[in-house]
Length: 320
Ligand SMILES: NC(=O)C1=CN([C@@H]2O[C@H](COP(=O)(O)OP(=O)(O)OC[C@H]3O[C@@H](n4cnc5c(N)ncnc54)[C@H](O)[C@@H]3O)[C@@H](O)[C@H]2O)C=CC1
Ligand SMILES: O=C([O-])CC(=O)C(=O)O
Image 1 (cartoon, rainbow, N blue to C red):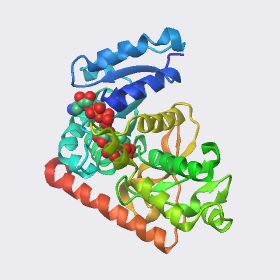
Image 2 (cartoon, rainbow, N blue to C red):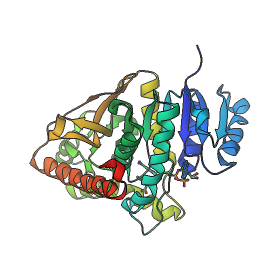
Image 3 (cartoon, rainbow, N blue to C red):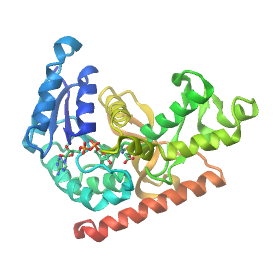
């Protein structure tokens, strides 16, 4: 059986890391697409030349031609611009919306059966726009953010409790911005919810609140340190987790920006929610019950994303 084909649209920091991880995990053959001449070709060749030492079998290629993504099983989109210190993700909306248009059209024409994972920011609005421009089925287009935000939350919690990250679970829902909602009640160490760990004296409410805030600011913390761009190792690893679940029909329960139609009181809207990802794409949106505070934080986050979607409609007439 032929290996799956993975198209990476954008061969920058995240795109290159995605290609490397996909090769190391032997998820399939990789095509890197970018408008910057030489970059996708150079990264593809460099990674291919690591194959004999890393011992993977995967073909790697780079291109500026959308025809080369033909028949891709998975497309992961990082094309566009990343923020620098002093900018918010939302400042990228105008420039990255134009990029989503060309990417959406390229995918629609050459890889209409692919499972598409958008990473480009501002994430929730960009995944919505990419779906609109591509016209692909909603369950085949989703956005990566919740896996990353939850991984950051899990990392901070594991450090605070001095336990393995493997035993920490967490869910971060809502939009991928300052309003994201780390769900403390649904986050656990070995199944023990965080509020119980406060009662058990493992941490204090103040420390937990600080970790929640650090999670919300997780992207900005890295931007402030790197200065030239934003995070790429953890974002790429998160998207690979989603792609693997699709390609291997693992049916992982992962938070991602999915099209929510009916659940959470939403009628046809992209925002971060827990989902099941399998061979059918986003096979299920998992609707969890929220208390008043959680619901109100989620509602504010949805409102913030709605504002960005409106802004997209104001920029591009074809989105109305
Ligand atoms: N959803 C999330 O959780 C995260 C999202 N991001 C976002 O991911 C995006 C990519 O980040 P990086 O890889 O660090 O940026 P980068 O600047 O290293 O790479 C972006 C690549 O896109 C290419 N590009 C620009 N316009 C294009 C077009 N029309 N078609 C094809 N390629 C095009 C550029 O040539 C560049 O190589 C940014 O928007 C960033 O904000 C970053 C981290 C996490
Ligand atoms: O903060 C950024 O600009 C990139 C991003 O979305 C993240 O790392 O969460």
